[in-house]
Image (tube, rainbow, N blue to C red; front, side, top):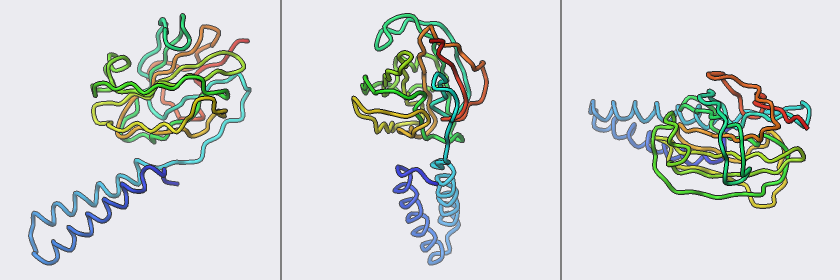
Length: 215
């Protein structure tokens, strides 16, 4: 399956490829052939980048899953003043251009907080990006506590998609958006959550357990 947001991009790169291919056949120009080859690679890459496999998780309701495919690059205790408003455990997941970029809900609950914050486009591996880069902030109230997370744009990523609405009921592993291309998600969990991931661990959105509430 291909993410809906990627379909127009795939169509347009396909059209551009056909145009350059026709020009290459007409003018027999090496540069045009080279450009045609490059556009074809980009065309094929978009099929890979915008892949949207089916995901599900049937574990206990207290379990929290990763919102993104990627690698855990930071785990630390912090103060979270926006939604949890107190001590929290922060998990940062870096998404390279080779990861599936469809984002998923980490736990079942109600969307209570949404805010888009304009900002810079620093390298997503830089920990300053959590505060300085463009981002979409999301707060979900679950039966066991609050979860706060951010879709953060990176050096190449210039488009954040979030389809959530305030007051919306959401289910764990449900698709809710994506970021293109290469980015990061920061997840803030309350202190009554036991973190279940380690640094440098690979995550699969909607399936990898990153924490569990201790009610």
